[in-house]
Image (cartoon, rainbow, N blue to C red; front, side, top):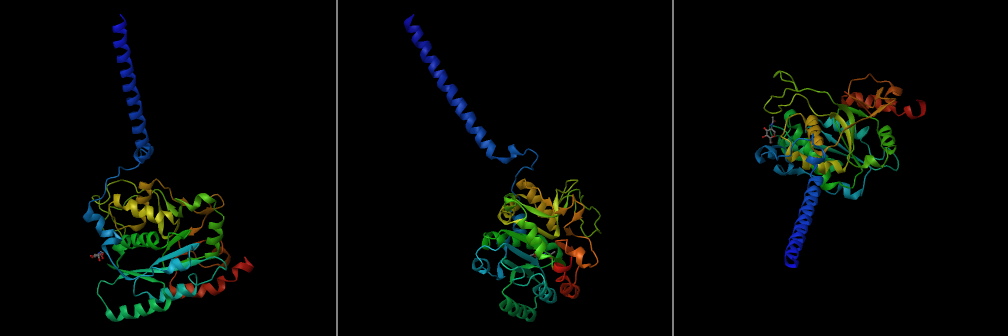
Length: 336
Ligand SMILES: *[C@@H]1O[C@H](CO)[C@@H](O)[C@H](O)[C@H]1NC(C)=O
């Protein structure tokens, strides 16, 4: 009897041990799953890396810098804002206009703002133009250039180049803005707006004009045509219009990382939206008065000093018009 009891006890304690092991194993599995965000956010697309040859096309590591400013950001330590402006080699006039208007140094006293023009290469190489360009770069120190062909279709490469540059050389910046050269920027309003955000906007924050119900264009004559084999889904994820958007600098590194799981498409703003979806980050609409006023005005709006003083950006300005309105706009601070 005693002997039998002993066997039973031993069996029971062995059983207990097995139970502990099973529970411990289960907890470990739960912890692993909890850190695996596919379980936390079941609606996210499964993360399968894009085939290397496809990812390489948009990966900045495929290309090399012809012009770089690796120390620009270090000198400023941690700028409040970095403006990244995609342009082509040829658009000297636009660069000049921006340097004289919203890109000028010291525009907002006490707030460090940098700007950089982001450039590829012309399809036909032009050594004379390149030489002039390099002289301009030496003079102003505000140009970065990589050796991919600059074209509308390659804007996704350029956007990834922006993310990569910020992640590599300017992690200390608080915010980054991607802004097209033909956009009017009300720097003061933007700075005040960002100063008004709470701490949460320092991380996983991206704002602009959010487009949340867009569908792919399947008509091949459309400027934004996208074939089904490149993008099979019926809807695009929410994304910010590419003309101008602002994000907390941590997102540059995260978007670069996420891009490994997102097949390249030639629509750069939608592409950033797809990367944000992988990250589980929702772009935020920048509006005032319960959404009645869109602060990132992507429509064209004819110039009116006090209307413009209450917007962050307005789209559709050529260099002459930008310079023309800038002088008058300076009066908005005292008159609007
Ligand atoms: C995009 O850039 C790559 C690399 O320079 C080039 O091979 C390709 O032709 C470009 N595509 C377009 C449509 O310009």
